[in-house]
Image (cartoon, rainbow, N blue to C red; front, top):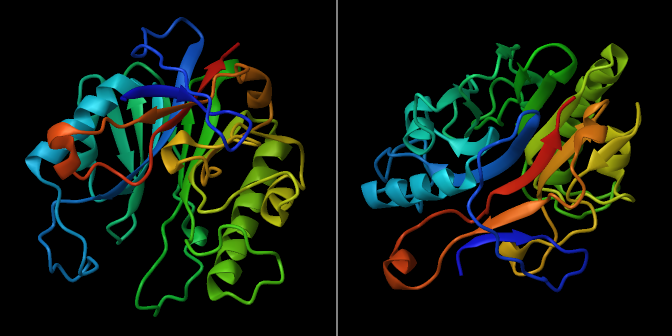
Length: 292
């Protein structure tokens, strides 16, 4: 079955099929995050790619674009994007404006922003690459953008954090956990600045972490003020009932903008030719915000 499903409060998914996104009402926006699973057309064997990663085919790009049209976000955080040109294959002009981080890696983070929304780009949060300059590989920066003007301006930070520490405790000796907690500290500092400025903000993307109210990572992020985790207590139908690692975290005035029960996950179709098409190992996650 293809379509939207409500993420429920228990590991058992109570599905609800919804129609394609309708036109956005004034002051009502859809905010989404979508990890696109190595969205690249570099040839297999490219030095920047793992050996098992293959380039996207034209058919795969067409199917992803079809799902992007169904998603119809106003603001979409994108992860694992190689170039703005590829992101624009899914979210083309003139409907969308694409911003991509300036990282020298294949798995960049990006934003697709509906044309007509005012956009101010800030410097990438390069401190999220906590590896030393001479490391053989590097981590992704955060993409930092203000969208809108005046009272309805939303500061957005798009992140894709280190994998390998989904639910380990703060005393874990895993190198991945040490790395991820260092990244969490960087985001905590960014959130503190937003709280001090009184800004409405969102941190969205692939956290590679099962955030929960008692999680030390989330407690650190909320140390400077209350946050609303839209995915808290919900299970994802995309992952067969496991909890989310793709999150939408709201702070400041944006907490009051979240429409209750608006969390949605868009599933991919199964069967037929689509079985042979690699889409993504993540599904798009969305909420609706009611701006003032």
